[in-house]
Image 1 (spheres, helix red, strand yellow):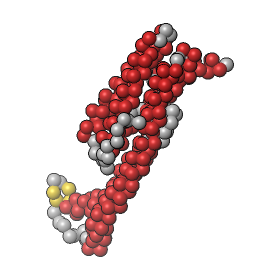
Image 2 (cartoon, one colour):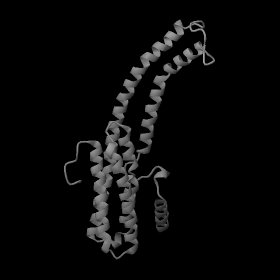
Image 3 (tube, rainbow, N blue to C red):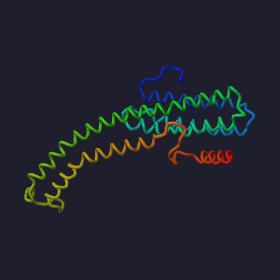
Image 4 (cartoon, rainbow, N blue to C red):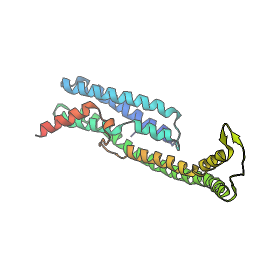
Length: 234
């Protein structure tokens, strides 16, 4: 699909895929340059301009992304392929009568690579979740034993008279109990932070095909297209 063997690095592979969508979008625009339907050309020009702008932003973000880090998944989420896939499918369907075989083929080539992006991101997400699970287990084990030791020591050996005196106007025993409490709940904070990150990624990347689940990922033009399509159906 990309014209060569895909690179083994996930970030580099995603960059290849995004560059391919940009190249095929530009090719689609060039093929339609001589089309007699002015409305079609204008719609495609807007669609391609938005796709290229987003592709350039994501391509820059992928320069410093490494697999296993959140940056790679965050960058993949920033490429709203569902919107692009819906837009390409809608344009091809809406202006079917104005297209010749070459123009339909250009649409199909762009749609193919956009459809491939979803499963690719899902595969990388599944691998990332495995890494996060391992990281979660290690982090909890590393923090749980010291936290448990501090909590037990505080319960068994700390007495009101163990640390007399005051520091900054606060009794030393209060500083010790506060520090002990903070250390004891570190594993809970580690668990919460990783689970929230995984849950956020799962929610933001739950759609694979041309389904836009989050209103923030929609453009006003998509809502207009949906309303226009509904009016045509009626």
